[in-house]
Length: 65
Image 1 (cartoon, rainbow, N blue to C red):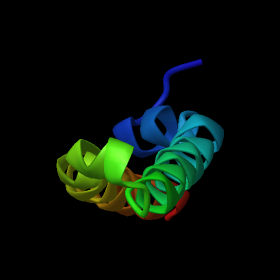
Image 2: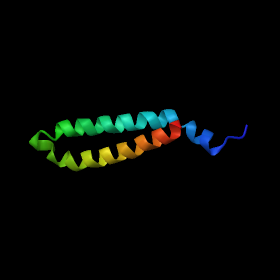
Image 3: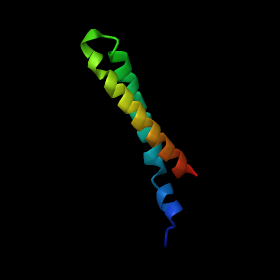
Image 4: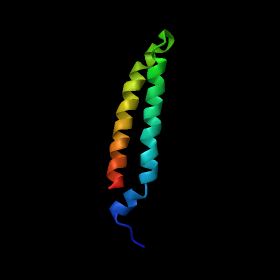
């Protein structure tokens, strides 16, 4: 069976759906930790995690179509 590019990318949809959820949950945990003085350096990691979560969420949306 020959798959089109759309079908091929569509098969990755379950992975691409759950990846942004995990990344955004990680960003939320980092955000809560930055409330403590000890973990203030995680503020940069929150920004990076939100960025990658956004990109992977867009990929999940594209693969869903």
